[in-house]
Image (cartoon, rainbow, N blue to C red; front, top):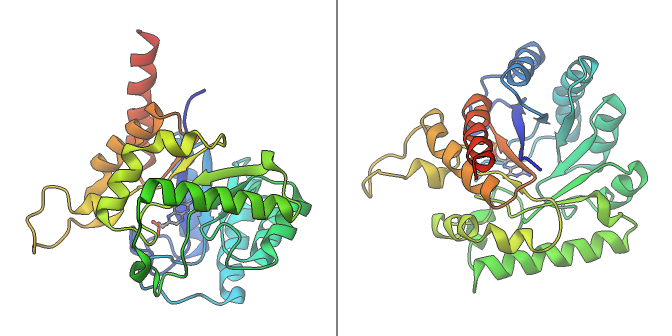
Length: 270
Ligand code: PMM
């Protein structure tokens, strides 16, 4: 089965990776349509920035940002995931047409999330998470990042299933950049097979993240700006696809769609 492309539609003024370029609902909808034309299989609509150090958005503001965008994009037939840590936002988003809930906290940030997701019976992305963005980088310490992340994800699965979520709803994500240093991100990328072996679909979200912005940059020099990290992102898409990932979450859809064409053509010639 080929890897899907989930295009990012951030309706935020401060997302690190696209600097709030799609902040108005009209701009976000137009951007979502453009990503669909470029070959996105899913659009991931989010209204709260999770960049390292970010302060939380209120629930009302999050709803105000994402619901009109989801409603409009769903009307044109797009498969939509909502990127939220709030159960109330997840519920209203699904009502407005989203069919996947993508929670970077894996149900930890909101005690109601598991119940709501269980009741709605939609796929639920459970990402490895160690606390909110304001403080997460102080928690980037692991004995062995690959086995620690796999163990935490397994614990989340047990907890969520205990709260009524069906195993078949779950998609796992190792959480690149969330309480992770560059070395942790590279280890996880190198050992995606360990995450795959947990037996769930895997989502990989490396797109434009800071560890890619450090590539080829001397120590002490500025990282490359996010928009100059797309070739590196496409390379991680190839690695994810070869490891059997269910989907990649990317900002620049066109380059990852092309990267996946390379993988498919090579596989077909074997
Ligand atoms: N990364 C971001 C936001 N949401 N969701 C999942 N499942 N996995 C991720 O890695 C992830 C995410 C942060 O990136 P952005 O600010 O560019 O959206």
